[in-house]
Image (tube, rainbow, N blue to C red; front, top):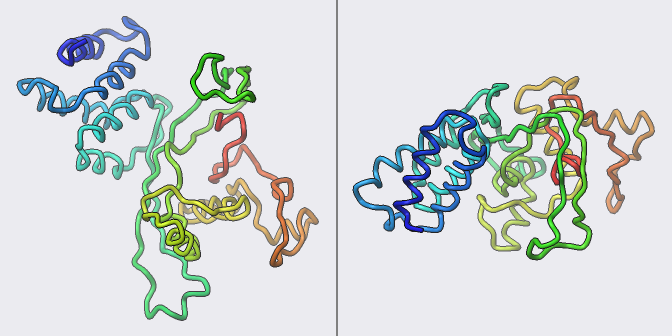
Length: 269
């Protein structure tokens, strides 16, 4: 199939009335075009098509089309427009399957504070979330899926409330802003700040969620996880000490609160 034919199909789908074509047609055609290099797109159509894809990345209400358009732009080296969209806050709307938050933070220094004459400059992290409505979903993988694990049996789950999940992993840059110790972990594996973070245990991950919720301006009443000191008083957990293990059951989660949290098993599947 030529790139020209795929372009014709994609434009036909995008200009048709809602529900005229299957819902995922636009998403699928964007991914199919990613099999071609930008130099394989006819010169006469290239500029106008790039503008269309950028517009879909900015405005399409479908999380699938939004993500596929962004992926295609990255495939074709359009990093400037991708960065512009990624760093533009988009408020939550019930009619859109994604939204983007801009969260300003001042990096923590902790025990390293004495070595700095001034604090690092504040920065802003941008987070795009994909929204899933309440309902019934099939999770797991098909029997003929490549590299399928034996424990990935397809089954049905029912989500009783809507939720939004981050569309990417947390990076080392974000973990370092939360706790400078992650700079050492990044160096140990020769990673870059923009790489996916590593070495965060469950306890630190929960604390990161609480830290980010605070930076977003949420009051304690909105936190999905209670403050550690309150858990100790309530008898849920012991005083942390070197070598002590904290299990997830030591830290109950309030799923109905607005604060950032880790996804449940059904949510991340």
